[in-house]
Every structure is written in C-alpha cells, then in structure tokens.
Image (cartoon, rainbow, N blue to C red; front, side):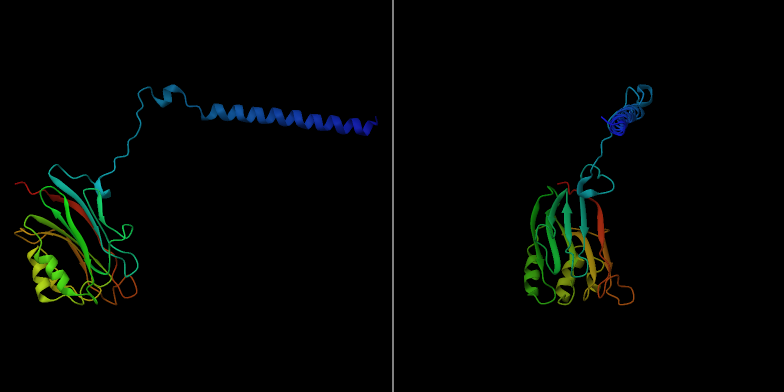
Length: 224
C-alpha cells in the first residue's frame, strides 16, 4: 500500500471520529440546557386551563343570562352569523343565510331556538317577512343580522314591527345599510343591543357598503 493511500484512510478515520465526538457532545449539551432544575419549575406548578366563553364572548355571562353574538354580512361577499348560548344558529358555514334580513327567534325563558329564516329585501316577497313577524309568539327574543341590502323593500308596516320589538334604527334602515339587533316581543323600552351604519359613499369601508358590524353581550333570561 502506498503512503498516500494510507494517509487518505487515516484522514477519513480522523474525520469520522472527530464528527462523532462533536455530535455526541452537542446533543449531550443540548439535553442539559433544556432540562430545568426542579427548584425553578416549582413542585406545585399547575397546568394552565384556557377557558372558552359561550359564542366566543370576551367575558362570561352571569347566571340567568344568555350569551349571544351577532355579526352582519360584509358587503355582498361574506354572510352574517348569529350565535346564541354557544349554538351557531345561522352562518355561511351552515349555508342558511341570505341577502336581506337574517332572523332567529329564541324562547326568552328556555333559550330554545324556535325558528330561523332569511328574507330578500331587494327583490323578494316582502309579505313573507310580514307574515313571519306577525307570527312571533310572546316572550320571544328576536335576533337580526343584515346582509348586502336590508332596506330596499322595507315598508312602514315592517318598520313598525321592529320598532315595537325595541329597535331605534328600523325607521332609518335603507339601501345597503348595515344593521344588527336583538329585541323582544314584550320589551318596554328601546333595546340596548343594536348597531347601525348608514350606507355612505364618503365613509363606506367597502366599495358600495359600510363595514361589517359585530355585537356581543348577555341578555337576561325571562323568569316566569
């Protein structure tokens, strides 16, 4: 065997041994550095629990209160959503929302969902909405979310219905306005749960529509 061949073999062996020593030392060192001393970790450390509130509310509701969250549609692209007591009643994912007014009826005592539907307020039959509103039983919570255009076919009769349910803005609702609302059949004053944005070319967030609205809160249970 020539001296040059022997030299190459010894060089390869040296490199392999050196690499093995380096890798072993590196991983051993890594293990040491990521191991926390018991005194630092704490003997009575507890796991952190992440609490999820109903409907994703920032704060939980007190006893005898229902949690809700209503989001209007965004322009004519993203549909609205209505959540009540952690139950998503209406949403684009459930494929049960549509252009116009999206409405869910909930029993004010039990929290049971009674009915949900949407009404095209641009080219639909407005009498379907009138019939729906006339059939709302006493003691019912009414949750409303607009999408695209909630006001083109709005008439005085419908505005009066929503005003009686506690709305402050139904009388102003017009073409492509954004509106979300929670009212009740037996409410004595105006509802505190309502948001409204007028369609205005100077202030619209989207091209032809105001921005999406979001409303969350806790509504008191009706105690019989």
